[in-house]
Length: 184
Image (cartoon, rainbow, N blue to C red; front, side, top):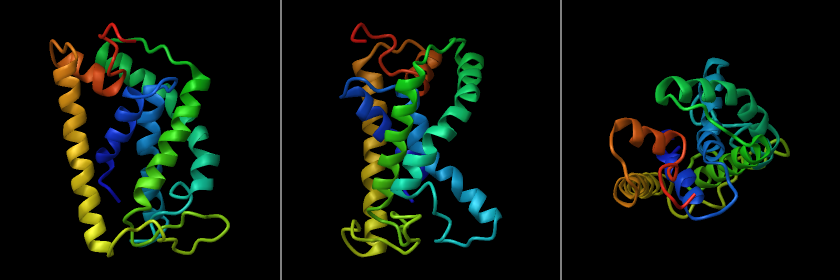
C-alpha cells in the first residue's frame, strides 16, 4: 500500500480544486480503508492478504460511510481538543466525501498492490489490471509520486495561505485548508 499518511494529497487536492466536498470527510475517507489491515492481521490473515472488504470498490461504497459516521464524533472531539475549534460539519456532505475518499484510496492502491480484491464480494481473487508495471517498481513509483504530492500539498498550504503558527497549520491540515482564507 502507499504508506497511509501519503494518501493525504488525494483528500487535500480534491478539496482544494473542486466544489461541494467536505474536507474532513475526504481526509477520513482517504485513510479509512487501511483500518482493516490491522484487524485482518489480528484475525490471522497474512500479508499480502490483509486487504479485503474496504479495499474493494463495493466494500468501500457499502461500508465507508458507516465507518465514517462512527468516526465523526471522535474526529470532532479531537479537533475540539487539539485546535479549540468546534467543527461545523454537514453530515450528508461529509458522508458523501468519506465515500469518495475511500473509493479514491482503493483506486490508488489498485495501481501497485500485489493483491487487489477490487471486486470483493463478487470475488476475492486478485485484480491487477490497473497495475501499470512490475509489482516492485509500481510500488516504488507510487510511493515517490505520493510523497511528492504530499510535500507539494503541504507547501501549497504554507505558501498560498496565511499560516501564523502551529495551531493555524494544524487547522489547515486536519480541519480545513481554506478556513483562514477569504476563498471559502
